[in-house]
Length: 108
Image (tube, rainbow, N blue to C red):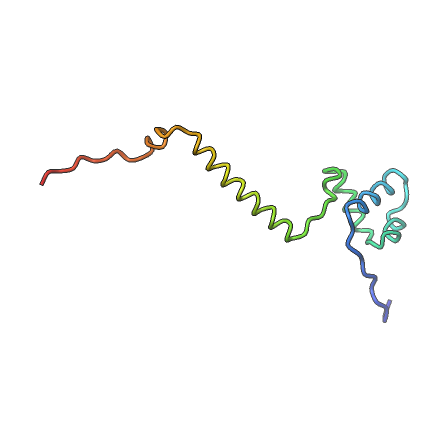
């Protein structure tokens, strides 16, 4: 391969990953054959098959880093809102019990 460029692989969708997994597992096609058809590495197909067997179809979903950050921010805001709603529903005396008992004031 001296002097030749390496093959560039493309970004694959969940549908393409699922197709590759089904072609290998159900149709009995070889991983190399399916990899060449989809322009992906054999290692990628092997990983998708392993994840599919362990977790299922949802394991083949790919999220971008931006999407992960956005989802974490949404989750954080949701948890804060949930905490506030729970506090609003509790009777006030529960919160008063947590306050320290006032000490007697000494007369001067």
